[in-house]
Image (cartoon, rainbow over all chains, first blue to last red; front, side):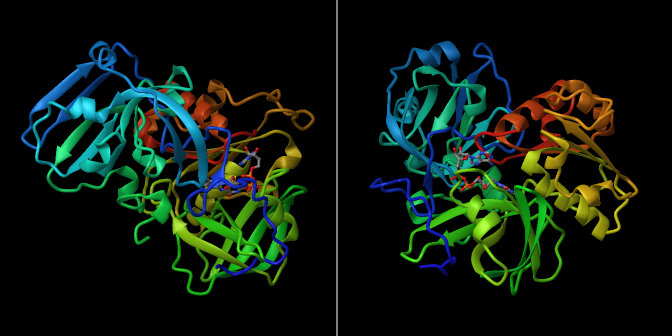
Length: 199
Length: 234
Ligand SMILES: Cc1cc2nc3c(=O)[nH]c(=O)nc-3n(C[C@H](O)[C@H](O)[C@H](O)COP(=O)(O)OP(=O)(O)OC[C@H]3O[C@@H](n4cnc5c(N)ncnc54)[C@H](O)[C@@H]3O)c2cc1C
């Protein structure tokens, strides 16, 4: 336990809900981004997977929407300390997108419109744990929250769920992304409170 | 571990906390700390606060706006007293920072409490004796909500401050009260041709709007760094 702050009682509004350490519950949907919100039209949007051999797999918006979709309800945890429970998304599982991609890579670097990047172990994108989401709460995903399409990897801190996602590079070596280069944790497990480098 | 050594009221609802943090490693203007409060039974809550001053030995300063019904800010602005300990973690953040060796002109756009890390940049510039030209566009609801008012009124060659009022302006103020508009940033920020570094900070809605306006004015999105403070407000 940390040092006690004299006279602090706290709100404990989370009741019985179990949250990762240091997180608090919110009903809002706060926004964390490093710069302006890119505006990407659905007609220009594409998703490109590039393997370690340079092989490219590309989906247009129309091709992407034709893939089987899922509607996961998940809890999300932002490194700025808010957690939001039971959020419902519609998206395409990365298992579906990567099913026909030949690779021996262990790592992935997600690339976004606007230049944002974030790195993840490839296995964290598989086995029903990650989606390319295009709807939130039954509505098209708002640009502020990463629309038209964002990565959704709810078991890691939310900065790993790259907004405005444009592609994935599959890599044999880990390559730190944007926040990871700026001092944030390489993996980002909220339950282990891996916020910053060295956690 | 930090200890509160001094407080200064910026407005009736915001106060600056001067903390003594033995072994503080120093920081860059724009970085923040995580403050963790712990109740007697072990329950704890954490929030982020920007470092508002330039590095000064083991002293750091935060300015906290009291958010009514908030969990942490009412404690920091009300209950927390000189001599009390508090747990802080940091400095954190390596992107929303201004470095004194960067010669590019700087446009700072603050909404409400978002002025805190931008004030750190103004102060770091002064501490470094830098001559980089700065412009601060500072949006508040009313004149009495301005933080650091005395300091920002004092002449600081190379730093121009443009207050902007959204609800009520002082008598005779040339600009009618209203939200930040494109014309404000066109007139008061550096033009895109100067390739300024733009730092935008405040409540989420303000930052979204201001960053969009800068992009619309022709600023390269990669030159615009943003820090979003919270879900709602100003
Ligand atoms: C990187 C970073 C730096 C920050 N720096 C500063 C700083 O220098 N000074 C400062 O005062 N704050 C700063 N903040 C905001 C701060 O972390 C807290 O969010 C804020 O103090 C409210 O916390 P709370 O526990 O009092 O309120 P909470 O209990 O979290 O919230 C109570 C209610 O107020 C609303 N609310 C939450 N935050 C805000 C807000 N910022 N404005 C208006 N309404 C809000 C919530 O939606 C909720 O309804 C920063 C935030 C970030 C992410």
